[in-house]
View 1 (cartoon, rainbow, N blue to C red):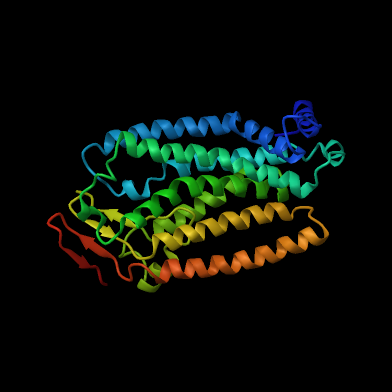
View 2: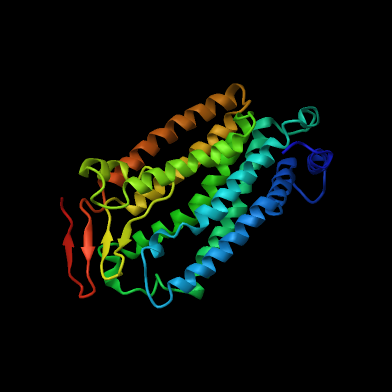
Length: 316
């Protein structure tokens, strides 16, 4: 996507003094959010999310499957479309350098306004989370045995991570790539890299028998979308997997922070850049700690639960 005169005019108009806003930054954040919300790619992704949700509701009627705790609808639709949308909206202004340099906001402030676009897919993902379980509360009304040792807080952490967190993370990653990547086909490379990363990790650790125990324990969660339960083909058993859903959510949030910081570093200068580097270093350390805790805490061994209420530890 290239810059159009309408894009440049929208920015200059937003940054012009206006009585309805306290600062040019607020005006810019508002117009960027509006541009994001009406972007065709985001609208298509949201529409696909609605379609796939209706299909999932029909398939899960009167039963609970592993999809209840690992439903990737938002990540695959809203998350991916938000990433592509954010990339193209970020790139769309790179050709309007002269106009933007004359604006009263710094490059870092304009990037921060772009990052606030993540609030749009976050709202959509939150609405999906509420409506999905209000219309078809298959997961929330599931028999206790299907959750095994997972607490209600752990279930909530998984649901939030696979919806709101992935939608926000996809947007911020798209902005970061849009700031730094300038080669042709960068958006396709970005999507392919994220999809291969996610599917590669999830596929390698889809069962407890597929990988060495140490790898299953420490590498299984190294993906932006995770799951903590797996139902058998006939839905007569559910296996709760290792790790801590709460700390995994914290780890994904730190990834979102790192993506935002990577975007903000683009053309930052002086004290601002030094501050961003320090914050980034701290966030990276916190991310490593969070992932370590996500892998080391929670269940240490998979647990298989049965309808009669008993459960067994799965060992190899």
